[in-house]
Amino acid sequence: MYRITSLFLLAIFLLTGVPVGAAPSVTANAEEALKRSRASEGRILGEHRLLDQNGKPVDLSVYRGKPLVVSMIYTACDHTCPVTTQTTAKAVATARRALGTDSFNVVSIGFDTVRDTPDALRAYARQQGISVDGWSFLAGDSEGMEKLAADLGFTWFVTSRGFDHIAQTTVIDAGGKIYRQVYGENYEVPLLVEPLKDLVLGRAAALDSIESISNRIRFFCTVYDPSADAYRFDYGIFLDFGFSALALLTIIWLTVKLWRESRSPSR
Image 1 (cartoon, rainbow, N blue to C red):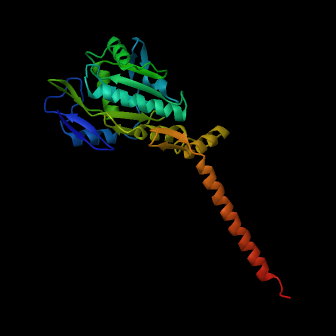
Image 2 (cartoon, rainbow, N blue to C red; image 1 turned 180 degrees about the vertical axis):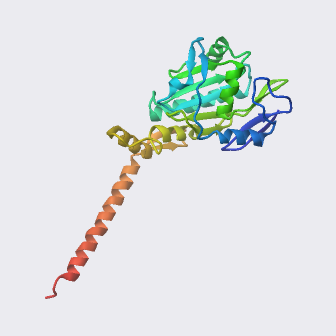
Image 3 (cartoon, rainbow, N blue to C red; image 1 turned 45 degrees about the horizontal axis):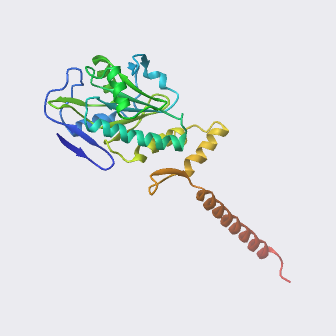
């Protein structure tokens, strides 16, 4: 397997071989796979019915109303997918501490429609130590998975070792629109948390209530601390704002004082 990685964008795994029968018909080319993935940003995710880890039908539309993180994996994977799942778990935990435990949902979707049954996904979740409210593991049939992959811009191929696929984690906004693609199996935490922060607190959140205004303040004051590998509320921003405001008022006062003195008659 040849792996092409970059620090911020991608870890794409592609080998020669014919595409899986249920997989999208695409060329085995890393650049094309990335282009396909990037092109999905801004697309509204269609209606897709899957099964959760307990075998119950789930429509992806039920996740509307909150941001959604989608991680495509296959349960027989012995390296990339487990690493991706653990990386996502770390980022999700960090995001929920900063943004709220119920501020977004997560789904891991098994794209191997032969082996990724609800039972297999339930076992995979247990092996990975994922038992988190708001995180489901979903399975689907070949036709449905092909359509879902097309919507997400996700590419995979069959190989003698299983599958090669673009390592892609997708952030979807509350309205079902693909907001950001995150690449790599071992990506940096802020690459996932920052778009979620945008959607929950910041630029993509409406200012239509006291709570939303409070969230906007949290957006500007919640910052990533690399030394702690965590997000924290930075009170220093308020101090900087206060000093800046005081300096501005002082300048205004001095300007007005000098103007009045210049206007007053000399004695």
